[in-house]
Image (cartoon, rainbow, N blue to C red):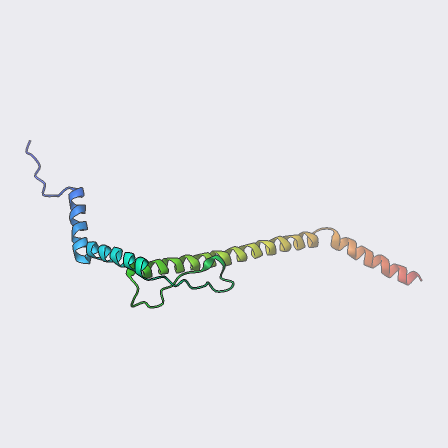
Length: 138
């Protein structure tokens, strides 16, 4: 039986090659070094101004860079992720409030149906009839 000849590369080698090409294209190693150097120089030399969160903001305070042009990609991504998290939390809160109110509405609606379907209407009608008869007897 003849041997099979394959020209395929191994998956691990292919992944390594792709990662290497991506790193070279995006210059990730250089960017990581610059970010690390920039973060150490800013923490050592410049005191950071911390803004007070808005009143009523609670735990939802997000530190947003003042100038987008002066911010690094990491800072922008961090602010973006924090804002997305805040938006998701607000949406979940709204959904929970709507669900809770809807659940209460359904319970009240069922209670009213049960009251209407029960003999309560018949009893009220009977009482009204008895009151009319009592008034007529006077």
